[in-house]
Length: 397
Ligand SMILES: *Cc1c(COP(=O)(O)O)cnc(C)c1O
Image (cartoon, rainbow, N blue to C red):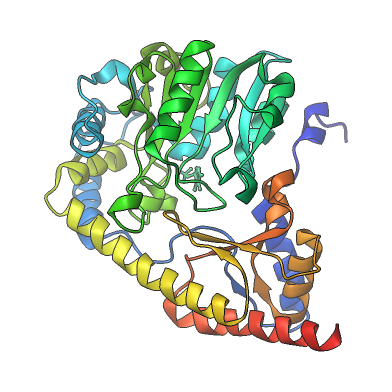
């Protein structure tokens, strides 16, 4: 069969590959446990599911949604942006609803990238950024989000300099997946200043805005900084905040020209998010139960984080404690240099899935990622497998 050439540039999605390896381990009779993908194991709050039921039962909510998204969701999102980030004056022209931020981030590429355009991206990164940009023919220049840059690489620095002078677009992702690291306000402001000086389009992925550990780590929106609205589009998602990755809903907010460009691509590509979901989320954002839920959710993850960090520490694993997100970034054991190989051996011998750092980029090599979206009752078992693996390797070394 003759398929599209561009398919050769599309690797199988990381977690599809990991699923295949996991099935192989299961076929050998191993009991597998995943601390790989970031997919909240708990349900969305009952009251939001009840709002959805109400909207599903309502007549009139079942036709094609508007391509731009439901205006009621955009009005609620504008109030959220003001209440949560102090960003004032946003109107409907600043919003488009997305089928989760993965869709928006992928389709934005078509709207802003020409072949050979240079794009600055974090490395390691959420894989969708780089894959879609390369598919569009972009020249991807990565910035090391690495202990050596304190996870906040300076786009003006030498490491990023080679082709960065030609950069037209820059992706920013704080809180950062896969490392869970957060950025200081000064740093975020410096990125906005850099983009404005050079007419660079800023694409901010804020999927973890509501999953953070302690007030000092409360994530900012890039739109808080002066002039950001001139050049920024920011992707917000309900997936991780409300434990609803399966609902497929989020919104992009920012510069009206960028929003309109994304809207143009999307209107030719998809037909939006079920109105009942958009309306339920519009009501949820305005609901007095919203903030208490987000707090409870953070408290739950924080307990898990403490437990996971404690257990990893006891095994002698070096961790970079996250300020936000549902991930813990860890050094590979001393002497190990190939994260794919190490994670593969861990899965083959114990059945435990964790993510190899190199899957997220060149500067992710030497690390692995543990997800906190594993049910509490499985965490001890999962990390017990890791402890056994580390001990047996130490014994054979
Ligand atoms: C999970 C995740 C997304 C995608 O979330 P959806 O809204 O479910 O598509 C985007 N970016 C990062 C960094 C993520 O971790």
